Length: 127
Picture 1: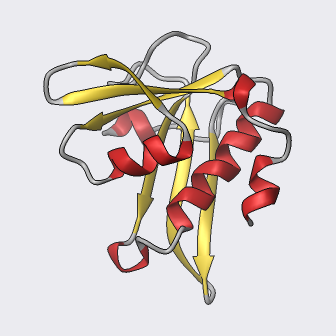
Picture 2 (picture 1 turned 135 degrees about the vertical axis):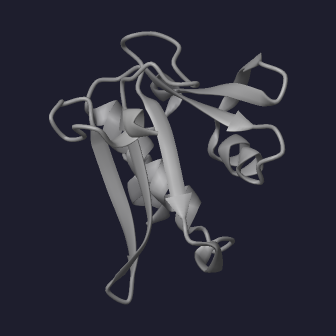
């Protein structure tokens, strides 16, 4: 798991946003270009997201993801990828946000979001 955190922030490709409720950080979404399960090429960042269970189902995860997609587009990226276990409840969130399944690897999907299709300031519309 160190691939996700080791030396995070030393590269301009490392991006992270957090969600805060009442002064407490309840979730985070981060991206970096790395050779992980969701890796598709050396120009596409991989996305990861985490949200405490008690805050799920309130739109916080979708808002974090849309804000990150907007940041990535403004930073000049063309797409973003992720890997997710098929049984993970988040598959529906990723689809709802606009990720598409591009590969089926047995127990997991590789999903990609085409940032060129993202309207300008998408995150401003949902926050």
